[in-house]
Length: 118
Length: 107
Image 1: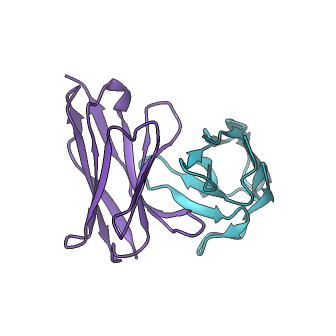
Image 2: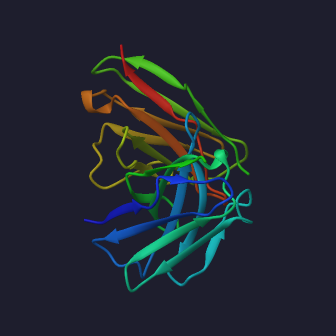
């Protein structure tokens, strides 16, 4: 059974870089697309971007200038870096497996809360 | 970006009720619409993909329909485990976008 687990600091200072890792177990990262999604408090879900196992990426235009998604096949992990964070980046961050072709997200992590505060 | 408008934002129902949730896209998305169930503190769960395909392992009381701009998730007979939040997602164009969610509460 495929499982995803997000990890990283729960508190980040304004203007710094938010860094999260998603560890994939039960399947190889060498296939599929791998997405990051977030949900600010009291708001809806926002797709951040995805990375294909080849390394190709696709980012949301609203975050593109600050986002980097990468993957490490040796550790079966993919990561998110979001630079110059503000309080508006406070959210629950999820990683998910994106099926490709029809692009439905069929496996998600439980999410990790990141608060941006000094 | 494609805007997804989900309704209602919440509803109250009883066990055994038939429940319908609607998602409307700001432009045609063909059948590229997915439905998820999300319980607090847990990973969202895919229920329906491509508008009407039931994800493996999902009970048959869940069904989806629609194409173009209007889509529906139906729970034919609400069970105690179903009282939670549901949201839709379009996968027609990036950026993928989501509905605001529907919270199904016990009447």
